[in-house]
Amino acid sequence: MKAFLDDRQRAHDPQHFMANGTRLPSPEVPARVDILKAGAEAAGAVFEAPNDTGLGPIAALHTAEYLVFLQTIHTRWQRIEGASDEVIPNIHPANRTDGYPRSAVGQAGFHQADTACPIAAHTWESAYWSAQSAIAAADAVASGERAVYALSRPPGHHAFADLAGGFCFLNNSGIAADRLRDAGLRPAILDIDVHHGNGTQGIFYARGDVLTVSIHADPARFYPFFWGHAQERGEGPGRGANLNLPLARGTGDEDYLATLDTALARIRAFGADVIVVALGLDAHVDDPFQGLAVTTEGFARIAAAIAAPGLPLVIVQEGGYVTDALGANLTGFLGGVGG
Image (cartoon, rainbow, N blue to C red; front, side, top):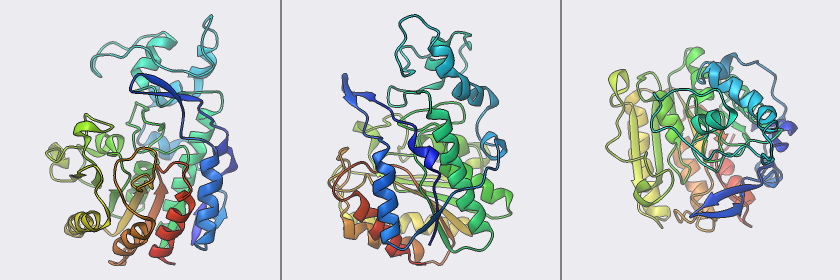
């Protein structure tokens, strides 16, 4: 299987995030790259560096205002007396239509949803090349490859058009899907991360040309809390083109696979001719976030079910954090896909 990764994706090294009011070490560490790369290679993946397609495919989904913010905010932040090494927001607008401030502090609050997406000196560089890896995978599939893996790190599915969150800055899976759409294909995004892909949903919520489907732990008591509920179906031209399938905490392989059947039926009904798999391995039973209880064997079965219809697959890495099983989970998934 062809795979894409740029070594500059390792440079982003977030130090902290907050959970339950406590400052903790970030689990989205550069070591994930080494573990995931080894896991993919064990399944036969052959890595190459992506080409630089420029900002165009990224700016197709993300606002110019937001991209300027990501590129400049760390430098501006460092001019503040006593500022932290990482850009972390401490104030947020009540809604997206509130006034747009000129200050770095205010803009951080506008463009960063939470404390899990600190921005440091190399964040933009890593996020940019993470997106380029997803674009390269989409281009390879559009050119005839059956299944391609993008080791996109930092991940992307919590990033909205102008808002970072949950370790995510650029919406890699969404960028890949939009790229496939531009190539004349009809993509569906199937998000199997333990957390709902709220940024992906937000970007495509009023569009009917890309189907978004997410299987995730019920957000009633789980991040991202405010999105991912079953009644969210899309709006306007996108009505009926968004499907959320929340699962009870601790759901294991069999019930997960039954829910996956529902997701794949919707993808067939949409008439998709390519699937972007937003691959979160954090649904594993031993993942630190403890949302679902999928086993390593379960990931191989999930992959086989996704691959069974024979549609081309762009597999974009999302979550999955450092455990003894992380690499094996990816090996099992890519092995289940085959090719």
